[in-house]
Image 1 (cartoon, helix red, strand yellow):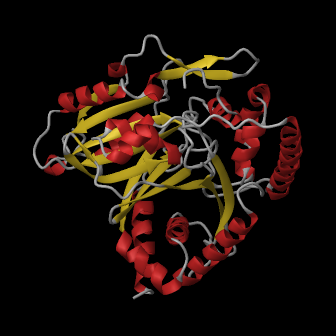
Image 2 (cartoon, one colour):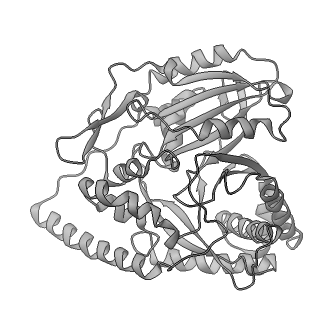
Amino acid sequence: MAGRQLSGLDVAFLCLEGESTPMHMGAVVIFDPGEPVDPEKIAKLLAERATRIPRLRQRVSPGLLPGAANWTDDPLFDPHEHIDTCELHEFYEEDPLAAHAAEWIEQPLDLARPLWQVRVVNGLPGNRFALLLKLHHAFTDGAGAFAVAAGLIDELPITKALLNKTETPPRPRSPLTLLKETLSDGKQTAGIATSILRAARPYPFSPLSAPSSTSRRLGFVRLEETELRQVRAAHGGTTNDVILAVLAGALRQWMVNRGQRVDGKRLRALIPVSTRARESGGANRLSGYLCELPVHIDDPVERLRAVRREMNRHKAVGTQAGAGAVPVLADRMPPPLHKLATRAAGQASGLLFDTVITNVPLPKLDLTLDGAPLREVYPLVPLAPRNALGIAAAVFHDGVHIGLQANGAAVPDTGSLRDAVLKSAAALYERSV
């Protein structure tokens, strides 16, 4: 695995990196040991396990061609430099963990070192402790993040298999096959580019647009999965459809609370879609849909129906076409072109979408760390340039955990939005029983 070349999409995420646009994913993971723990002991255990995970020892090194780069082992790798501990004391905050995690998550990673960090946070109520995780998007996508970090938690058969998994080398292809694939990719690439140009909105004005800022605010919301299943049983759709409908209702109420009109308005969300195969390793395997969120609809059931129609339309087109397939287009661009164009294209992202909403898949397993059960996990998606808000969700056990990451200069408090998510979910559930 050492020396694997970064894909075009990997390079794009690195090129988007900036002081006010750090391109790392994150997560706040809460464990319940039932009794006080020694955070230094947890940190030592994590460091021991990190040394056994090959990808966590790798950094980005320049390639032979202009703009190209490779993943190579860091000869000075020390896991203790990536892991630290903290005792939570910000009890004057409404949510001390969210306030602390926001200050931590807004700090960019050092691109000259392996692109990850972990912090053990002690002092939560009930003897609980949290892990704050930071992993650059060039390193992997949301679907691959668990596979990369699986070796940090207590071993299970599936985590051991993920840790030992390597990327399958490409199958040998004849010159004729390569020619056909190149021509096919060229047609797809042109189709995606055309769709993006058609989808661009001139001079967008959005309540979710703001000048980029180094400041971040976080919010955590937990919904009952049983209630979402009841909504599905009553009105159909997928779990992701229901989550999107809940979030559309929450954004509608949040806009109203901020004195903004919602009649006739729609918000457009970029919905990342994993295209990774079972044999894929940690590399990014992404496409996406540009989904119109029906914030103009007051009725929660009608909002869900509108979301279902929109998502079904995108699924019929597929992940290799349409304006949402921006990651596919980025992956096919040569690295030198990313150096020239990606930052400028990122600044124009508001022409295409107002926010990013992602659903991170997690296994339905009883996961532990040093014997402490994992209870809650709130994923965090990086903010696109000029976006005021990014939303990530993860279904784990009997809960749907939603992580809100906001531009702190534009959204100084996420409390109103957290409340709106809970109220939106309750309104949809009440219409389903």
